[in-house]
Length: 155
Image 1 (spheres, one colour):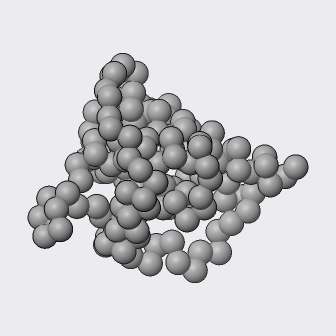
Image 2 (cartoon, rainbow, N blue to C red):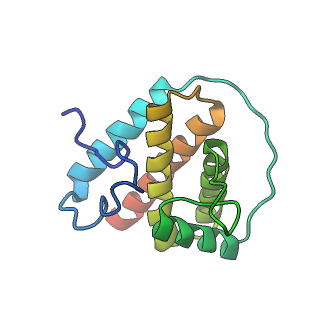
């Protein structure tokens, strides 16, 4: 498999705002490269066990945060755009989205979910951050959700 064929987790979406637009990359070939990229990340993650409890976000709150990410390519804690989500906050948010998507699939949220995970992957690689089990789990959840969608479409 060619290296660097899945480019979406290698660039900062804020600096390359049109990264996802007009992509000719699709279908089975896209999924194979996407899967390869995600499995490579999972393989490199450490296996630290963290037991964290988080407040479950409502679907409306998730949708609003997803819209904010789509427009600004970042999510901020405050309206003045002074304090951006930390990597751990993005990881928690990704987990919240996956919980919501497991209950009921929403493709607009799913699309943003993939982009947020690309951003998490970009930050993990770029900033050389020590990974934890939470990061490992979000990518495993993402692969499982994506496979589920594909298998449902094939049937």
